[in-house]
Length: 245
Image (cartoon, rainbow, N blue to C red; front, top):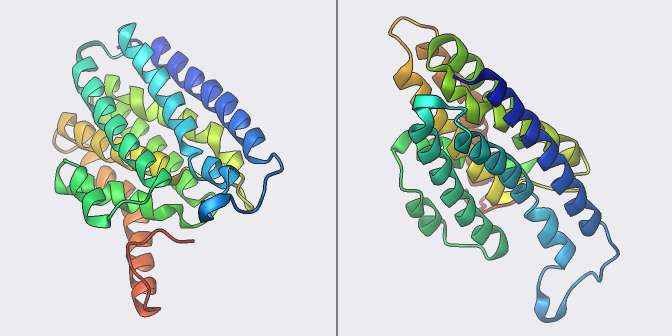
């Protein structure tokens, strides 16, 4: 395991995300007309909604370069596959941000185990309040990082490290009133990456280690919040899965 390489990739993810998010925020805050012809959402709103692409690019670029330089050692194949899957989910999320898809199609497109689908969509539902998804994702990634170092394969700490850095770089843009949102792009990427990382770390952890209990607990906040959101929308006679504030 190349510890210095993993640390450097985290720093790179932080700076890339900060630079891209700052540029996206500057464009989103430019004066714009309230509505574009044809009733379409103004360009600034689209940019704000797709701000998560900056975090995806920051984390993906830093992780990809680290893999290419050999920072993950023998776990490179697992981390690379995980990153590719998360990238596919992010692309689907970007499509959702630009043009809403049917909920059934969005869920069906996430071809993964039930746990990964559940956690991915739980994190997607967290994007209903300013800063919530980014903060919970950052804390969860930090927990996975600790589990990877203590109870699993330390090389699997690469993606959680870049996630911590990337989400930290994006966090300040999501304070109320949020100038940028992770949107479906960043939410589904974050949820998939966290869920799949947790599965890999759990598989690598020796029996009896704390990771067996800690990893499921890391998803508790996202799952509990999702349950509350679904129940509250149902009680208010609103669509439980439709994106809303």
